[in-house]
Amino acid sequence: MNRFLIAIVLSLVAMVQARAQYDLYVEVSQAGTLEEEVTQILEDAKYDISSMKVFGPINGKDMMFIRDLCGVKGFSEPTEGKLKVLDLENADIVDSSEPYMNLHGRDLYSQLGRFGTCFLYNCKTLEHVMLPAYLEGIDSLAFANCKNLQNLDIPNTVESIGYGACVGCDNIVSIKVPDGVVEIGVGAFQQMARLKELTLGDGIEEIDNSLIMYDDSLQVINLGRKFKTFNPVVFYTAKALNELFVEADNPYYSSQDGILYTAEKDTLVTFPPALDMEEFTMYPDLRNVAPYAFSNARFLQKVTCSLNLEGIDSLAFFGCTALKEVNLNDLLKHIGFGAFGMPVGEESALEQLFIPASVSDIEGGAFILNTSLQSIQVDEENPYYVADERGTLFSKDLKRLCFVPTMAEEVRLPETMEEVGAYAFAGATGMASISIPDHVKAIGDGAFAYAAGLNELFLGEGVEKVGDLVVDECIALENLYLFAPDIREENLQPYSFLDTSGAVMEQCMLHVLPGTAMNYLSKKGFYSEEFDAFFFKDIVEMDHPEGVADVKVDHDTQVKVFDAAGRRLENPTRGLNIITSPGHKTLKRFVR
Image: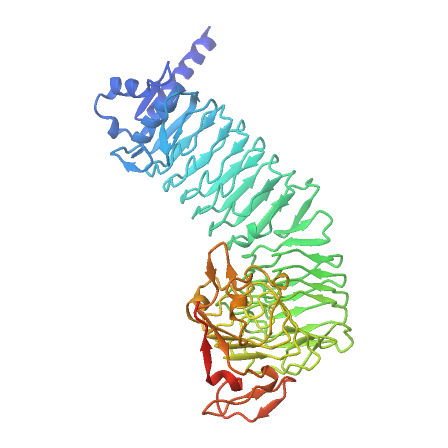
């Protein structure tokens, strides 16, 4: 009997203590009556509530009232509410025919077991929320922009989390997604300024590439047993990330020293950007470096490849500003796009790179915008590539130009050359004028992209094929001379001469052969039906053009001039590789 009485007393004490934690303890017997219950207790003092615990069913009408207590009405209209702590652990969300919010013309209604879309959106007074114990799902933007929310304990019953659910929750430090969750929406945890650790439960198999975007404090990510699919860019954006951990029995991935590998450790998947390691030697059995694998690794200075490494995929070392030395192995075959590239305006410490004899495939743009890389050397036994003394990279047969160091002031193009490879001149800053000889037939994607100092571009009469975005971000380009009689539409891309910055359209004149202007005004690659726009400021026809091969000096000052074979025609005194064609003094404007 005494034990029974003691149990009752302890239960009552616990209840009193629980009630003492909150300004208001409300029991709701019927959904939609929360405001009435609060008014009966506090009369007109609802805006004085800083903490509240709710028992019983709640619906859309109650959710609208809760938002009022949290300092917001409708979507963003402020109120005097001051609620900081909301305990709904013993509440049940039920269906309602009355909306709790109108979002851009769409009424939002409460649904059984769902923490509704935008339920607590913009509730900036909230610091702590305890969710219903039997919650099934957290919908889109449910907690978005709750700037002061400090914790979020997700019940094990939850199966889905909607897009942007916690976007902008700047004070949450840690989130643990329980094993029952099998779906996480786009950007669910992005823009969380103080989030340091994210744990994904065993139910998560894939995540989208914006899940943690702009989470600049995120240091640790724990991945569950079923995790298998993601876009590698998802970790590229986490600048503070220094550890990736995977459950030991995950059949797809493994982790070692905070680095993510495939389960067999034959591919390095992610080297966290903030991992404090200056030198790294790959596992002997490593055969591939995945896309973005080392991207943004800001402390990494030296990398020694494994003897069995065969491929370095796209953007693998992109943005590695501290990287000084990369020792490539003698079995390496492939170097992908942007593998040793840099973002616009950032510099790398990598000044030179030696390409071994085994490399057979270097994708266009492999070194894109790497302004520090001024010397590429190629093993003389390599049957696929060769580099000249200036560090300019060509195919072994000298038919394709592959890479020009961005600071180069001149380039000698061989008579055998037929193609300007993809991104070959990308980021070039040392040349105000570039002349592509008449014997060149093809211009690759982005061939001159981001050449910020390029003012004049001459494309010879042999050009038959042009890739996409060849002059993108050429913000100083004012004249483009096209000597080709015609370029067939099937050999053009939809945006061959589009510049996404808009500078070319605003300032650059397209110069074409006499009688051909009409051919280009609506031609794919020069004009977009989608935007109803011509990609140049205007078009003019040249009088008596003789082609790039016959280019001669037509300036008051001596400048560097080269013939079609890349031979210097006269010694320079000042200026940069600026050339004009004899017919350029007189231009005939074609009025559209």
